[in-house]
Image (cartoon, rainbow, N blue to C red):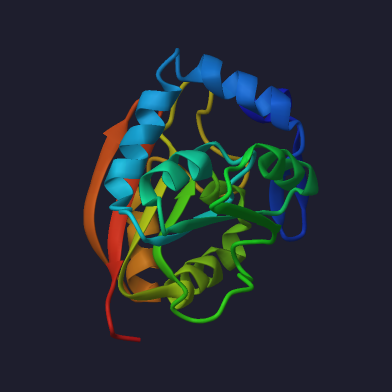
Length: 207
């Protein structure tokens, strides 16, 4: 239901949300006025601090990236990546000076190894095709510095979003944790927020 309302476009590299303004409006309604509080909690759970370099994978219109940018100031920077040209254009118009945005996909991140202190991905992993999700997690690991942090949050099952046509049941957090561990991350915490389930991890030095 939410996918139809938000004009989700599916392609060979994954799904992207083209109706960015509609997505923003629907998100506000879906969280029942709690979106800012929930996303501020995501920022806190990410561990982002002043001076950090942060990557937000699947940033859509840049809402989370803007909140992260406020935390990492004055010397930190946030980069948002999304497959939708429309979303990136929207994010660029609204981003603060310490935010940059680029078109890209999770399974092919165009950044050097160990670039970021923190990587986040919210409401995006279920859009990545099932067969390349392990590659996407490996890419997130690659661009995270040793000791850096990863936070992923996605839908919990609900009447509005009962389970995906994309092949990932949001309730199976163990599947996501396994992929994170296989990529090299050490899972440290998991929990629930309104509408969302989150997992946080640290990059270890192992392969």
